Amino acid sequence: MVAIIFACFFWGTTGTVASFTLNVSPLATGAFAMGGGGLLLVLTALKNLFSDKYKLVSNYPIILLGGLSVAVYPLAFYSSMRLSGVALGTVVSIASAPFATVLLEWLISKKPISKKWVKSFVIGAIGVLLLAMSKGEVSESGTHIYNHYLGIMLGLLAGFTYALYSWAAREMIEQGIHSKSAMASMFGLASLLLLPSLIITGDNLFASTKNAAVALYMAFVPMFLGYLLFGYGLRFIAASEATLLTLLEPAVATLMAVAVVGEKIITTGWLGIVLIMVCMLIQMPKRIVSSA
Image (cartoon, rainbow, N blue to C red; front, side):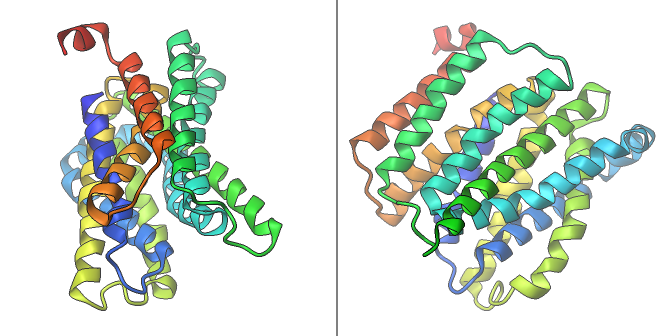
Protein backbone atom coordinates (compact mmCIF):
# COMPACT_ATOMS: atom_id res chain seq x y z
CA MET A 1 0.00 0.00 0.00
CA VAL A 2 2.83 2.41 0.83
CA ALA A 3 4.47 1.68 -2.53
CA ILE A 4 1.24 2.49 -4.38
CA ILE A 5 0.73 5.67 -2.35
CA PHE A 6 4.22 6.80 -3.38
CA ALA A 7 3.30 6.01 -6.99
CA CYS A 8 0.23 8.23 -6.61
CA PHE A 9 2.43 11.08 -5.39
CA PHE A 10 4.60 10.71 -8.50
CA TRP A 11 1.56 10.57 -10.80
CA GLY A 12 0.05 13.59 -9.05
CA THR A 13 2.98 15.77 -10.18
CA THR A 14 2.32 15.27 -13.91
CA GLY A 15 -0.24 18.06 -14.36
CA THR A 16 1.89 20.69 -12.64
CA VAL A 17 5.08 19.64 -14.41
CA ALA A 18 3.37 19.48 -17.82
CA SER A 19 2.14 23.07 -17.34
CA PHE A 20 5.72 24.27 -17.82
CA THR A 21 5.86 23.10 -21.45
CA LEU A 22 5.20 25.41 -24.39
CA ASN A 23 3.17 24.42 -27.48
CA VAL A 24 3.32 20.69 -26.75
CA SER A 25 0.29 18.50 -27.49
CA PRO A 26 -1.04 16.66 -24.42
CA LEU A 27 -1.30 13.58 -26.64
CA ALA A 28 2.44 13.81 -27.30
CA THR A 29 3.14 14.22 -23.59
CA GLY A 30 1.08 11.13 -22.77
CA ALA A 31 2.53 9.03 -25.59
CA PHE A 32 6.15 9.87 -24.74
CA ALA A 33 5.62 9.48 -20.99
CA MET A 34 3.95 6.06 -21.22
CA GLY A 35 6.08 4.91 -24.16
CA GLY A 36 9.37 6.11 -22.72
CA GLY A 37 8.50 4.78 -19.28
CA GLY A 38 7.64 1.45 -20.87
CA LEU A 39 11.04 1.18 -22.52
CA LEU A 40 12.74 1.90 -19.21
CA LEU A 41 10.65 -0.78 -17.51
CA VAL A 42 11.73 -3.29 -20.17
CA LEU A 43 15.43 -2.38 -19.90
CA THR A 44 15.46 -2.75 -16.12
CA ALA A 45 13.49 -6.01 -16.19
CA LEU A 46 15.47 -7.94 -18.83
CA LYS A 47 16.69 -10.50 -16.30
CA ASN A 48 13.17 -11.07 -14.97
CA LEU A 49 11.69 -11.21 -18.47
CA PHE A 50 14.20 -13.89 -19.44
CA SER A 51 13.47 -15.91 -16.28
CA ASP A 52 9.70 -15.67 -16.83
CA LYS A 53 9.75 -16.15 -20.62
CA TYR A 54 7.81 -19.43 -20.62
CA LYS A 55 5.17 -18.13 -18.22
CA LEU A 56 4.86 -14.95 -20.28
CA VAL A 57 4.36 -16.91 -23.49
CA SER A 58 1.61 -18.99 -21.89
CA ASN A 59 -0.08 -15.77 -20.74
CA TYR A 60 0.18 -13.89 -24.06
CA PRO A 61 -3.59 -13.14 -24.27
CA ILE A 62 -3.41 -11.29 -20.94
CA ILE A 63 -0.25 -9.45 -22.06
CA LEU A 64 -1.91 -8.38 -25.31
CA LEU A 65 -4.99 -7.17 -23.45
CA GLY A 66 -2.90 -5.32 -20.89
CA GLY A 67 -0.56 -3.81 -23.48
CA LEU A 68 -3.40 -2.50 -25.63
CA SER A 69 -5.04 -1.06 -22.51
CA VAL A 70 -1.82 0.74 -21.53
CA ALA A 71 -1.60 2.21 -25.05
CA VAL A 72 -5.21 3.39 -25.12
CA TYR A 73 -5.26 4.83 -21.58
CA PRO A 74 -3.20 8.04 -22.06
CA LEU A 75 -4.85 8.86 -25.38
CA ALA A 76 -8.33 8.46 -23.90
CA PHE A 77 -7.44 10.25 -20.65
CA TYR A 78 -5.90 13.37 -22.20
CA SER A 79 -8.58 13.55 -24.92
CA SER A 80 -11.28 13.34 -22.26
CA MET A 81 -9.78 16.31 -20.41
CA ARG A 82 -9.58 18.32 -23.62
CA LEU A 83 -13.21 17.69 -24.61
CA SER A 84 -14.97 17.70 -21.22
CA GLY A 85 -12.62 19.88 -19.20
CA VAL A 86 -9.81 18.92 -16.86
CA ALA A 87 -12.01 18.54 -13.77
CA LEU A 88 -14.74 16.35 -15.25
CA GLY A 89 -12.33 14.35 -17.40
CA THR A 90 -10.17 13.59 -14.38
CA VAL A 91 -13.11 12.68 -12.15
CA VAL A 92 -14.68 10.30 -14.68
CA SER A 93 -11.33 8.62 -15.46
CA ILE A 94 -9.97 8.31 -11.92
CA ALA A 95 -13.22 7.51 -10.11
CA SER A 96 -14.44 4.92 -12.64
CA ALA A 97 -11.22 2.87 -12.53
CA PRO A 98 -11.71 1.27 -9.06
CA PHE A 99 -15.32 0.43 -9.88
CA ALA A 100 -14.31 -1.20 -13.18
CA THR A 101 -11.50 -3.13 -11.47
CA VAL A 102 -13.69 -4.61 -8.77
CA LEU A 103 -16.21 -5.67 -11.43
CA LEU A 104 -13.44 -7.41 -13.39
CA GLU A 105 -12.26 -9.23 -10.27
CA TRP A 106 -15.83 -10.20 -9.41
CA LEU A 107 -16.87 -11.35 -12.92
CA ILE A 108 -13.63 -12.94 -14.14
CA SER A 109 -11.54 -13.78 -11.07
CA LYS A 110 -14.61 -14.61 -8.94
CA LYS A 111 -13.38 -12.48 -6.03
CA PRO A 112 -16.02 -11.17 -3.60
CA ILE A 113 -16.61 -7.45 -3.07
CA SER A 114 -15.95 -6.49 0.55
CA LYS A 115 -18.07 -4.03 2.52
CA LYS A 116 -14.89 -2.14 3.43
CA TRP A 117 -14.08 -1.63 -0.26
CA VAL A 118 -17.59 -0.31 -0.99
CA LYS A 119 -17.42 2.09 1.97
CA SER A 120 -13.98 3.34 0.90
CA PHE A 121 -15.03 3.76 -2.72
CA VAL A 122 -18.14 5.81 -1.92
CA ILE A 123 -16.21 8.14 0.42
CA GLY A 124 -13.28 8.47 -1.97
CA ALA A 125 -15.45 9.06 -5.04
CA ILE A 126 -17.37 11.82 -3.24
CA GLY A 127 -14.04 13.34 -2.25
CA VAL A 128 -12.77 13.34 -5.84
CA LEU A 129 -16.05 14.88 -7.04
CA LEU A 130 -15.88 17.68 -4.44
CA LEU A 131 -12.25 18.29 -5.35
CA ALA A 132 -13.09 18.63 -9.04
CA MET A 133 -16.02 20.97 -8.35
CA SER A 134 -13.80 23.19 -6.19
CA LYS A 135 -11.58 24.05 -9.13
CA GLY A 136 -14.46 25.83 -10.77
CA GLU A 137 -13.93 24.22 -14.15
CA VAL A 138 -17.06 23.48 -16.11
CA SER A 139 -16.93 21.14 -19.01
CA GLU A 140 -17.67 23.59 -21.82
CA SER A 141 -14.54 23.15 -23.92
CA GLY A 142 -16.59 22.21 -26.98
CA THR A 143 -19.28 24.36 -28.60
CA HIS A 144 -21.37 21.29 -29.29
CA ILE A 145 -22.90 19.04 -26.63
CA TYR A 146 -21.51 16.11 -28.58
CA ASN A 147 -17.97 17.02 -27.47
CA HIS A 148 -19.09 17.07 -23.85
CA TYR A 149 -20.55 13.57 -23.92
CA LEU A 150 -17.74 12.24 -26.09
CA GLY A 151 -15.30 13.47 -23.43
CA ILE A 152 -17.26 11.64 -20.73
CA MET A 153 -17.24 8.43 -22.80
CA LEU A 154 -13.49 8.75 -23.31
CA GLY A 155 -13.07 9.26 -19.56
CA LEU A 156 -14.97 6.03 -18.93
CA LEU A 157 -12.76 4.32 -21.52
CA ALA A 158 -9.67 5.65 -19.72
CA GLY A 159 -10.94 4.32 -16.39
CA PHE A 160 -11.80 0.95 -17.93
CA THR A 161 -8.41 0.54 -19.64
CA TYR A 162 -6.64 1.53 -16.41
CA ALA A 163 -8.64 -1.15 -14.62
CA LEU A 164 -7.85 -3.68 -17.36
CA TYR A 165 -4.09 -3.38 -17.20
CA SER A 166 -4.13 -3.27 -13.39
CA TRP A 167 -6.18 -6.47 -13.37
CA ALA A 168 -3.94 -8.05 -16.04
CA ALA A 169 -0.79 -7.29 -14.02
CA ARG A 170 -2.30 -8.79 -10.87
CA GLU A 171 -3.44 -11.90 -12.77
CA MET A 172 0.09 -12.51 -14.07
CA ILE A 173 1.61 -11.93 -10.64
CA GLU A 174 -0.81 -14.44 -9.09
CA GLN A 175 0.41 -17.00 -11.66
CA GLY A 176 3.99 -16.65 -10.48
CA ILE A 177 5.25 -13.98 -12.89
CA HIS A 178 7.49 -11.36 -11.28
CA SER A 179 5.90 -7.92 -10.98
CA LYS A 180 8.72 -6.37 -13.06
CA SER A 181 8.07 -8.86 -15.86
CA ALA A 182 4.32 -8.29 -15.73
CA MET A 183 4.59 -4.49 -15.97
CA ALA A 184 7.47 -4.51 -18.47
CA SER A 185 5.73 -6.91 -20.86
CA MET A 186 2.58 -4.77 -21.04
CA PHE A 187 4.30 -1.40 -21.13
CA GLY A 188 6.89 -2.64 -23.62
CA LEU A 189 4.12 -3.65 -25.99
CA ALA A 190 2.39 -0.30 -25.46
CA SER A 191 5.65 1.51 -26.28
CA LEU A 192 5.68 -0.10 -29.72
CA LEU A 193 2.25 1.43 -30.33
CA LEU A 194 2.66 4.82 -28.62
CA LEU A 195 6.13 6.03 -29.61
CA PRO A 196 5.50 5.96 -33.40
CA SER A 197 2.51 8.28 -32.85
CA LEU A 198 5.00 11.03 -31.91
CA ILE A 199 5.73 11.42 -35.63
CA ILE A 200 2.30 13.06 -35.87
CA THR A 201 1.82 14.58 -32.40
CA GLY A 202 5.39 15.21 -31.20
CA ASP A 203 5.97 18.73 -32.55
CA ASN A 204 7.91 20.90 -30.07
CA LEU A 205 8.34 18.02 -27.60
CA PHE A 206 12.11 18.63 -27.63
CA ALA A 207 12.07 22.15 -29.08
CA SER A 208 13.53 23.67 -25.91
CA THR A 209 15.50 22.58 -22.86
CA LYS A 210 12.44 23.06 -20.66
CA ASN A 211 10.19 20.97 -22.90
CA ALA A 212 12.82 18.22 -23.09
CA ALA A 213 13.32 18.23 -19.31
CA VAL A 214 9.57 17.90 -18.73
CA ALA A 215 9.29 15.04 -21.25
CA LEU A 216 12.18 13.13 -19.66
CA TYR A 217 10.82 13.71 -16.15
CA MET A 218 7.38 12.44 -17.17
CA ALA A 219 8.86 9.26 -18.63
CA PHE A 220 11.33 8.55 -15.84
CA VAL A 221 9.60 9.57 -12.59
CA PRO A 222 5.79 9.22 -12.85
CA MET A 223 5.76 6.45 -15.45
CA PHE A 224 8.91 4.41 -14.85
CA LEU A 225 9.30 4.77 -11.07
CA GLY A 226 5.56 5.13 -10.51
CA TYR A 227 4.62 1.93 -12.30
CA LEU A 228 7.61 0.10 -10.84
CA LEU A 229 6.15 0.86 -7.41
CA PHE A 230 2.62 0.10 -8.59
CA GLY A 231 3.70 -3.32 -9.86
CA TYR A 232 5.48 -4.01 -6.57
CA GLY A 233 2.33 -3.12 -4.66
CA LEU A 234 0.25 -5.46 -6.81
CA ARG A 235 2.35 -8.35 -5.52
CA PHE A 236 0.69 -7.98 -2.13
CA ILE A 237 -2.79 -6.48 -2.61
CA ALA A 238 -5.66 -6.97 -5.05
CA ALA A 239 -6.02 -4.76 -8.11
CA SER A 240 -9.32 -3.40 -6.76
CA GLU A 241 -7.58 -2.19 -3.60
CA ALA A 242 -4.68 -0.75 -5.61
CA THR A 243 -6.88 1.26 -7.97
CA LEU A 244 -8.93 2.47 -5.00
CA LEU A 245 -5.77 3.90 -3.46
CA THR A 246 -5.09 5.81 -6.69
CA LEU A 247 -7.98 8.12 -5.80
CA LEU A 248 -5.21 9.91 -3.90
CA GLU A 249 -3.72 11.09 -7.21
CA PRO A 250 -6.09 14.05 -7.87
CA ALA A 251 -5.60 15.23 -4.27
CA VAL A 252 -1.83 15.29 -4.78
CA ALA A 253 -2.27 17.02 -8.14
CA THR A 254 -4.41 19.72 -6.51
CA LEU A 255 -1.96 20.32 -3.68
CA MET A 256 0.88 20.57 -6.21
CA ALA A 257 -1.09 23.09 -8.27
CA VAL A 258 -1.79 25.20 -5.17
CA ALA A 259 1.80 25.08 -3.88
CA VAL A 260 3.69 25.46 -7.17
CA VAL A 261 1.39 27.05 -9.75
CA GLY A 262 -0.57 29.21 -7.31
CA GLU A 263 -4.04 27.85 -8.09
CA LYS A 264 -6.84 28.43 -5.59
CA ILE A 265 -9.38 25.93 -4.32
CA ILE A 266 -12.47 26.60 -2.23
CA THR A 267 -13.63 24.95 1.00
CA THR A 268 -15.33 22.04 -0.78
CA GLY A 269 -11.98 21.14 -2.31
CA TRP A 270 -10.31 20.83 1.08
CA LEU A 271 -13.28 18.77 2.28
CA GLY A 272 -12.76 16.51 -0.74
CA ILE A 273 -9.10 16.01 0.19
CA VAL A 274 -10.14 15.09 3.76
CA LEU A 275 -12.61 12.49 2.42
CA ILE A 276 -9.91 11.01 0.18
CA MET A 277 -7.63 10.72 3.22
CA VAL A 278 -10.45 8.95 5.08
CA CYS A 279 -10.78 6.58 2.12
CA MET A 280 -7.05 5.80 2.40
CA LEU A 281 -7.24 5.22 6.17
CA ILE A 282 -10.15 2.79 5.80
CA GLN A 283 -8.06 0.69 3.42
CA MET A 284 -4.98 0.68 5.66
CA PRO A 285 -4.48 -2.36 7.92
CA LYS A 286 -5.60 -1.68 11.51
CA ARG A 287 -2.09 -2.22 12.88
CA ILE A 288 -0.71 0.63 10.71
CA VAL A 289 -3.51 3.04 11.62
CA SER A 290 -3.22 2.28 15.35
CA SER A 291 0.56 2.68 15.34
CA ALA A 292 0.25 6.01 13.49
